[in-house]
Amino acid sequence: MKTTDDLMLVPGSSGYEAWRTRSRGGEATPDPDSRTRRAPGWIALPTKSVVCVPMMLQGADATRREASARLELEAAGLASEATSAHHVEFLPVGTAAAGREQQVLAVVQSGPVPNDVLANGIDSQYAPSVLFHSRQAGVAQLWREQDGWVLTIPNEDGALVYCQAISAKHLDDDAGAEIRCILAALEVGGMLPRLDRLAVAFPEGMERQIDTQFVDAVEMPVEAVGMDVPIAPLANTRLVPDEIVQQRLDRTQRRMTAMAVAGMVLVLVAALGAFGGRLYMRQQHVISENQRLDALEPELAAIRDARQSWTDLEGALRRDLYPVELYHQLMLILPPEDIRITKFEAREDAVSFSGEATSLGKAIDFRGTLVNHPGFKNWNFDEGFPQPINDPNKGTATFTAEGRRLDFVSTETKP
Image (tube, rainbow, N blue to C red; front, side, top):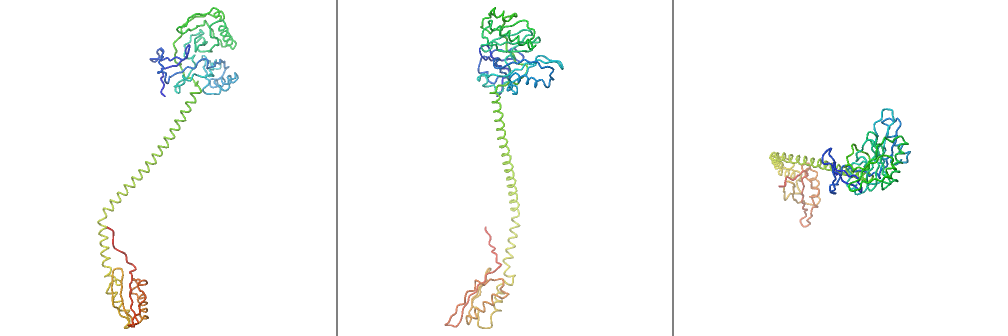
């Protein structure tokens, strides 16, 4: 979801408020229209949802400073938050010289953020709400946030030293005592800066009245001021609510799944494209071959005609197929007497004849002579010479013989 970089959601005196910066570097203005709260650029984490832990790192090298700060958090009982990448942010307080101690403020995310605020915040940036307020050097600040009071303590340079949502709901002696306890704890740790006064920011519509008991308990000058206009943090932070982390993880997994599916589809399309291209090339090859064969058709027809002509002349050119020669060979194997031929017929694929013998034995002997004669080796009489028929009235035996050509191939072609 595209974010609106100039839109900020900041907790106000009674709830979250939308602020929009109309121009770069310009002052933010309220934007009460809820429809413009889609995908804000910044969302402030309420102070009551974070824990600030000030610490002084003795002579820690800059590259090892964060590791030392995480060890301090583990010693303070925040081990689970210290090991998380999005639950803690370390804000340096000023710049330390090489080898000197460095003051650091660890901001730990410990509480939830309203779901309606996080509804469209998957791409938003997150920071503690204190970073959305301007600070004055040497002036402690107290402002209203979500029906409570928040205390901010800067140093002499205006850098944030400490921030906490106080438990008191009203500015009375109890609230003053709580603030004095916070200042005393910082003083014991050697991290309390010089403070000139305490500025109490009242929201619009709230009476600017400060109880004298509160002033006496705080033991420093107190002044009433108006609420300042929120500003965008100068740098990004690593703080992100768990719900947003899970949403981003789910979105990343969906994107990876979609990319995997898209990759598989692309591979499949590429494979089908390659297969289709190969089929197209084969088709073009077949078409080209058919065109080449069509071009050769006149030559092939001439070859077929020539072959047919030689086939037609084969019966006259081959001795074993020429009818006159076959009849001559048949006459050569006839005995001088006892057998005579009554019918002779020669065709392209077969030769047949009929005859008469003086006896059944003579007809059978003639059959054996015919089958074994070299002149008829290209003809098969095995199935075309039935048993001769004996005629007892005439005292003769008639026979019929038909030989099939062994090397005959039909020359008929389909149209």
